[in-house]
Length: 72
Image (cartoon, rainbow, N blue to C red; front, top):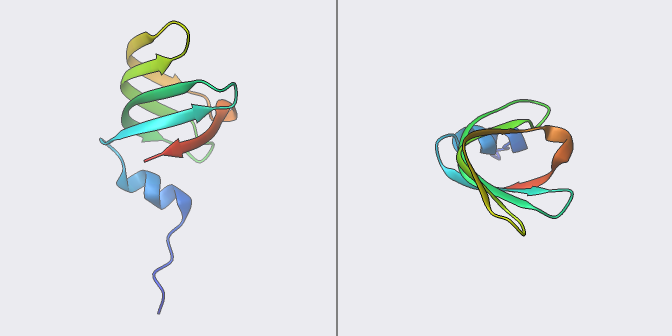
């Protein structure tokens, strides 16, 4: 029997690991994944937004509408 895994299962296994969130506007957000939901809203700890100006946040919530994909 094949072990099937759903995409959100992979995110669940990645809690407390560093991830990169690629946004639809081309920006990247890197941080430690603390939480997520079915809408792909993600909460990142020690998050850095990589763009022209690099910004850092102790905790950042990215709305799922803005997420293109998440690299684990």
